[in-house]
Image (cartoon, rainbow over the protein chains, first blue to last red):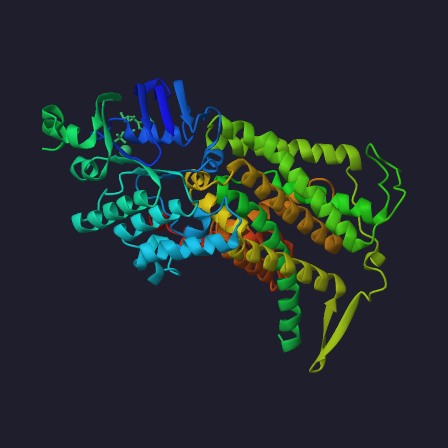
Length: 233
Length: 316
Ligand SMILES: Nc1ncnc2c1ncn2[C@@H]1O[C@H](COP(=O)(O)OP(=O)(O)O)[C@@H](O)[C@H]1O
Ligand SMILES: [Mg+2]
């Protein structure tokens, strides 16, 4: 479904990701783990069009994403829930969610999905009229995920959804990610919290200093001595 | 200082202040999405006034490139105002393409865009001078058709005069303000615009095309500029191609006074300065142009972020 082929990504002269190849198949949860600064966020940003690859290719459903701006890429069914949540603080929770459905015009379907998100995260329903900036960190993460779901994505990119959250809240979020996957959403999950990510993922990639150093079935990889040492403590 | 005196000044202040508010919102909209003051806004204000003049009166002045040219038609004032405003909106779009977009695409410093907007302002003003000449244009007194120039209302022993022009100024400005607030607060595109003002990158991830919205914002800003130029022009005449520049500077004081980037601040700032000018004692009337800056100075001493602006800390 998503395929990166020898993608090299750079900020000016500084290369952050060196010729990485990876793929995500329809229906999978794939996790990309790695230490801080490994290049995980950079990779997701390239997929959603926020930065242009220096070389290599990125394709989604067989179609190259080269030259497409982020607002075009969303329309292909690829939602990016960015690192640090990035909720629109000055807008209400409901407005945030409605803007998640910006690319859609089926009013009835949008209303239905809004209800679906509120059922998924009842906290958000209680706070629908509140400014997003006044939510707690966990609630903001729920809002960011809910907002990404509002465009009915085929593929959901999640960048460190557990960042800064209490373990119990993280667990809740990961349960929901698993749930979404059962409902048919393909997921590419970037995490530093390798333990939990490996538990719910089908396959995993380990990124180190901008290069893939290990990949494979999540269970097997979790058993790999090197990976255990470096990422699972 | 009777009640009639008070009401008269209140009326004068609100009507001119509401136009300042509309003009100021043109700066504020662009500032809130790009973080830059668009110095060409004053030139678009001038352009709007001249365009409406020509459309409504049907002829050009005595010097300038188009001296003596007459149009084969004359539009009714209301229509000329609308067409003039729409053309000003297009001028706003042109300003974005010329002064802002090329720099934005290169990720240039905001200060450079400010300088390039100043450059475009000069080009525009010179272009206006080239076409229309440097003379003063005044709308003919019958521009509003058969409406009486003013209505008198008795208050106690005295009279309060409501000039028809004032009513037009206030009515049109109020309508524009309400339309704008409705658009920004309640429509999908208005919400998208606010999303973009807060975080363009996140907005783009939601499917909002940033370039289109920047362009649309410049269009709306241009419409507001052209409209307010016409309203001031009908009220006080078009005092040469540079008249928008001085109003532009004064309106900068309005937006800083109200709080940079704040929409309610721009409205409040416009009304405050309009009222302050109106209530200025007659023997100080030669200082009228200084009122805005004096007020600005005083307010900034007490509240550096302006009346309704946010603290830098609050923003983060
Ligand atoms: N905007 C940027 N400009 C320059 N370098 C950056 C920028 N963002 C990230 N980097 C660099 O790219 C590398 C990868 O960063 P990132 O993708 O954020 O890593 P991760 O998400 O895995 O923590 C790091 O060395 C980081 O310093
Ligand atoms: Mg990161």
